[in-house]
Amino acid sequence: MSREGASRANDDLPRVGDLSRVGLFPLPNVVLFPAQLLALHVFEPRYRRLVRDVIAQNLPLAVPRLAPGFDADYYGAPAVLPTCGVGEIREYSELPDGCYNIVVRGLARVRLVEELRSEPYRVARAEELVSLPAAAPVGEALRTELIKQLRRLAPQLSGPVQNLELRLRADLGQSADIVAGALIEDPDFRQELLQELDPCRRLSWLIAHLHGRASTKVGAAPRTPAHWN
Image (cartoon, rainbow, N blue to C red; front, side, top):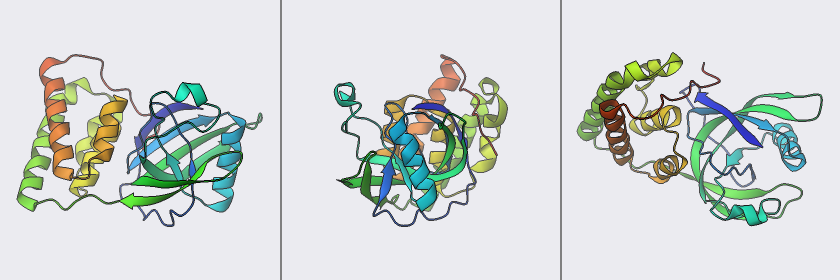
């Protein structure tokens, strides 16, 4: 299994629905945010079976990050980080060799409560994690500052990511997720942002990160997402 790309989704997200049984698609360095599209090539037999069943049964699909030390038990059931993104398979194509190309639309952040016995792939019960309310004056000031930093960074961006500002009319938490999903590549930082339920803190972290990028111009510009509506 491997990651091929990520991008925006329709910002008006439906509710995630029943989380009593979700399929697990663990990956070492991938973090799925709400309002993000994640393109994946699925080739391992157990995950090909998982994708078939998720499509047939209309199940949510969680994408937890594998915990450190997963290599020793990769083909078994290595530990995963309990906070992860969950979504739906929005697009898929089955290839002649039985592999799949899929696009997962992130719907919510969740905590994996318990893993359920299942073969040949893994399933779990999860609960949704809801962002904390944000004080309007503080939140709107942070949104304004985030947009300011995006404008400063714009010359370093390419393609559709230049239009991020147009998408930040959503609620504060979702605005933070949209920017994080599109611009943050470091998996550890992405995981921290996903686990943080205070939207103002997430926005503050993003503002500081973007300010540093715009000021120093260190590092390559973000990859252009593979799928962008």
